[in-house]
Length: 356
Image: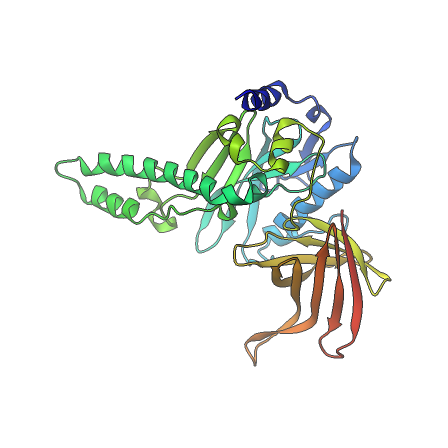
């Protein structure tokens, strides 16, 4: 009981003391549809660089300082997803001192244009993106997911009771009942958004409706709040240290991290690994530091081993991607060591990367 109280008091006593050095401006050229956060953290330039690189590569598909307009791919629908993305505004949220949480609002085109809200959370001690599952003990992730699911189901079921209590339900109400009865609610930590507050963590689950049914969806997305005190017994050592303000960091997985190194001992590259999915699959973007042109990787990460394919081009005749290289490598502490094999010549080159 005393330990829980001490943890809570540590959190409550932390504020923006460290964050006063974190400044955020708009990435240039800013415009009505291009308000995107650019981080300035002069006391920790490496942290500043890592956060800006992550945001620009993951959201804009732009490698910092590579020339041209950073918003070109996103705003002209020539990005990986072949749809445009606008960024209307952002906000820095109030959090414990070791954490930077930014909310970002914008619009993206898919089958239809649709506004979106997103949240990005970073560890200000390292500049690393914070993965939700890293916050919790491995044995507790399913329990925490269950708590999230329970809150969603309670919210949806309470609304269903209200809808079903109507004596002569209209056609619209009947459609709403069908919508909420078929709602997906089995979210996991791997597939949910979240952001930090001063004394609570908020998970954001997607709404029950697709775009076509959105007008019927009175509930919208689900914002589910948990105080740090409620979650304390499920937190990992990393999560406790992060939230309490400790400078003890500890090791976390490679997902959503930046690595630098060389191919063949002489070609400097930078790699941004995306999230490691529940089925162990992942994608990554890397570039040669000299020319700063993005190259995509896709692969699996199992038992600290990477098996990666680097695609060259898509064959219209074969209807499949033709590889340029195959990579096999092992995660050893904060390093990745292995080989990059040219698919055509079968020649092996050494690959060595180190976490930034």
